[in-house]
Amino acid sequence: MLVLVETAAGYGLFRVLKSGLEEMDATSVAKAFATPDKAQSAVSLEAFSRFKDTKAALAAATALVESKLDKGLRKFLKKNINDQQLTDKLAVADKTLGGLIQKKLEIDVVYNPGVQEVIRGIRSQLTELIADISEKDMRTMALGLSHTLNRFKLKFSPEKVDTMIVQAIGLLDDLDRELNNFAMRLKEWYGWHFPELAKIVTDNVTYAKTIKELGMRSHSKDIDLSDLLTEEISKEVAQAAEISMGTEITDEDLQNILELCDRVIELSEYRGSLAKYLEYRMSAIAPNLTHMVGELVGARLIAHAGSLINLAKHPSSTVQILGAEKALFRALKTKKATPKYGLIYHAALVGQSAPKFKGKISRVLAAKLSLAIRVDALGDQTEPTVGIENKKYVEKRLMELESDATKGMGKFAPPSGKKYTPMRAGGLKGYDTSADQVKVQQKSAPSRVKEEEPDEDMMMQQDEVPAPKKIKKRKAMSGGPAAAAAAGDMEDGGEGMKTEEGAEEGEVAEERPKKKKKKRAQQQQDEEEDE
Image (tube, rainbow, N blue to C red; front, side):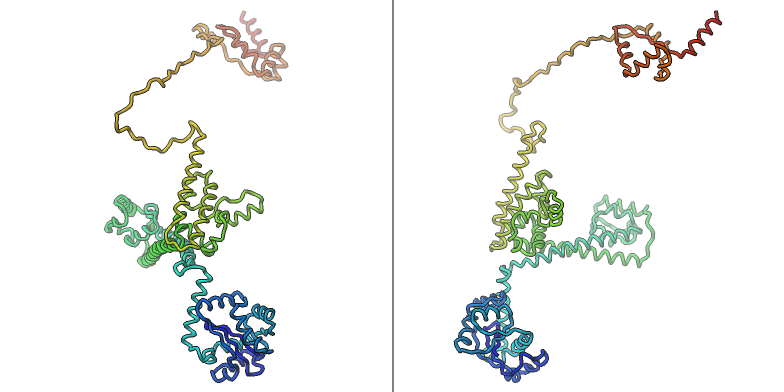
């Protein structure tokens, strides 16, 4: 049986001398290749084809990784097996490659776990079985081939390793979360001793530095905080410390709080250095992308896509909603409107646009952004090229949308942002009075009914007359013709009374209150008694 072994130096064809070697277990095979002498008694080198240069080695390694039959391997097997008219079986390490060899070269192929152990044993004693290659040369060739193969697979230059960006933006988000958690814990912890400080100093890092300098709140009079805070805030801190409602803490409690302050300060400093590192890496790897949307949004787009080359393969419609996949699938499922933007919503060009234009601007930005990403992924430029023109185009499009929106508003359009500049030469122009118009106030039509002021006697009579009482409908129906008429007036919404009041000019309609029959009869009886 023959064994095919691929190495960084070339192809090797070995013959198995020990019968039943491929059927042994892993321990027995390992013992058979324990020493160089045992390995030479188990297998022998039949043929070896060395690669001419690194390019040939890269082509062969790429074909083997993709389980393809390389042209060089086909010639090697045809020369050493078919031309020699050998009928031995060929053991291979790749099942797919073995199928191609059996189909195209008509060679019987063997693939099983025992063959894998035999190939492993041959690789362990490879430099002893191949006399022309030393162990040092084999390691050097393997290292060079691995570097070349990885560059070819990534399709990047050594400077463009976007994995660093993916890890950096992920770590930056984690640091923001941890820093926020530590700062909230610090405010809650120290707030038991000095709760007013959190309202005066709002910044987390400055708050931690202030606690580290201040310590106990009773030291506020003796410690100068002018290096951290302004003079007004320092006075406010000192005044709040005198009337603070916090509890007293021990020195041991303060020591633990100060250690937490150190952690917050260290994390904030490392976060700043990591942000600078991310900015430099983004400027080197994706200059056009960074110029258009900034390093943070660009890094999040790369991290979401997995790599810069994967992001370059996405169409602009996918770049537009990248990061809003949940909302997209939910909208498709419920048959509602799909989202208009994803991660690019945080870009400055989208943020500065009006709410009704954000969808249009995000679509235009995604179209130009996809072109810039492809230039960054497949080009060698280290400075922004197409990104400058694309950003100007998006800004121009935004100005056009805003101008079109204000053009149709007429006098309701917001005032323009042009600054008033007085004339510098020739003095002031003369005032043109031809454009002046005098607003003539039109006289209103005289009212048909002219209201006159009532006389004093008439006013006195009205004051003497008591106000009429409301008459219920049921009682009005049983109160004779006068009450029925009053009830009818009430059903008509009081229109009869209104017409009586404004019937003639200068007359005052005196309405006497309608009394019940019993009261009227009682009045008549009282009058008769008086007479």
